[in-house]
Length: 269
Image (cartoon, rainbow, N blue to C red):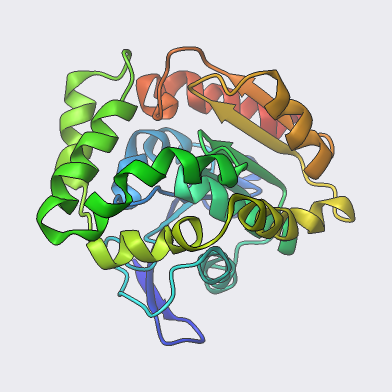
């Protein structure tokens, strides 16, 4: 395990393990990025399976796990942290995979840094729509007395019908919901109009127009037919794939299937 200090003084924890660079099957390396309130261990079932054939780097986003808290929790800062880890770990054009918040982060990284592919697990990028969904919970999230129960209820609703009770319990035990961090991450959603949020996201994705990158969006819930068209308009060639009724954690419902899908996507990329 190792840490780096970013330009704003934030300490970011990361760890690389698995197949060595001398093995042909280990290239490119893989970088996994977790979701909000979680840490690198939430992706452990996938990481463990990938290590047989790949060098796998995991990290904790700022304000999560073993990384330090920070003044900023916006998408630009977190994408910068991922790029810094890529450099410190010596990752040359890695495959980057992110879940939830991590999916948004790796999507921004793929538009700005050289990578071999991007996989976004269950993070819709039309964040303007998220504002409407999150609005009823905002006052409860801002109140310290109701913040914890509200977070628990939100994630309980996202497990879906197929995630095992054991995995739900494991995730719940890992979850560390820091109110300052969560509000910092979602400040964009709370403070901007839906139109401005979407414009910010589109700006973050603009690099894909001049830098084609194999991109897979893998969803556990159906966003409707319009999302695929929106995605390919902003990320040319992007694939949008639905695993019905898998909820917010399709990679944990069936990690063997997830790893097989990643390997297949990377082989085609």
